Length: 306
Ligand SMILES: NC(=O)c1ccc[n+]([C@@H]2O[C@H](COP(=O)([O-])OP(=O)(O)OC[C@H]3O[C@@H](n4cnc5c(N)ncnc54)[C@H](OP(=O)(O)O)[C@@H]3O)[C@@H](O)[C@H]2O)c1
Image 1 (cartoon, protein in one colour):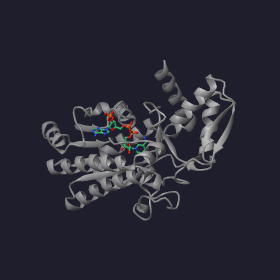
Image 2: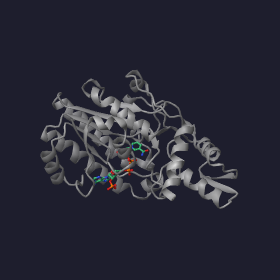
Image 3: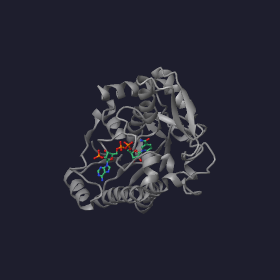
Image 4: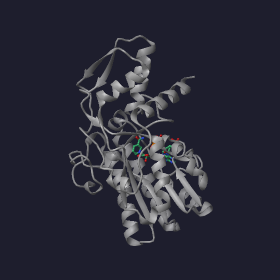
């Protein structure tokens, strides 16, 4: 069975592509050069030529809080174009199965935790990533509208918590929390720095999952796509404070210095813990503990430096 995986050069896409279950499918992973998702015309020609039975949509403009604050218009426009172009062209061509990747950023900033799927659009969004979240919400709603218009379309949105792992982005302008902690603490350790700065007071809480586990969830749900609810959270069900993540990475890297807190820096939502009952009830659980995921990610980072 043929699967079009978008975003196959990104962290999530690469983990999906190299997961052992990918070998049961003919997985197409066009680069952006081969298929620019901001172009409807390119999408139409690609879908007509390759006729995928499934699409796993893991492409998007993604960045940490820094990048989102600096460029909200670009995060809105590009993600809106990418999501709406791909999903609507797929529907026109007759693709019946889409796994669209959402994000926990799409939930209201004051939603009660753990965040249930039905809280979507129930309140204001976190301003630091509002543009990105609006674009991702539009893609999810489009999946729903197309499914309502034709119930033979199995268009499902998976809502991952924050992800980290192999192929993470270590560029400080674009990195997410765990990759940026690894870079900062590794640098502090090898340069004998006495302290490392944390943005905010370290009390904000986040849920992080090893990206290979998310890839596992994608391949787990794909064969049952026609029986799935239209939105499913995918997470570990546990969150930790930012300071806990710094302490955990310090332990693994052997950084023994102190931490300072920069209270002038933005920190985003106070808590973003997903309710994972739906995916757990389907029989899926993540395999990697936080410690084992961070160890593997650090070793990947060291390989990238070598
Ligand atoms: N990382 C997380 O913590 C996280 C959490 C929740 C949800 N997600 C979702 O997972 C998806 C992938 O995230 P990621 O972390 O893997 O991001 P990433 O590493 O930045 O990868 C993004 C991918 O999208 C591709 N892309 C961007 N614009 C494109 C375009 N116009 N045409 C074709 N391809 C394009 C990129 O191609 P190039 O290599 O050419 O740039 C890359 O392959 C996103 O939808 C994101 O919202 C991620």
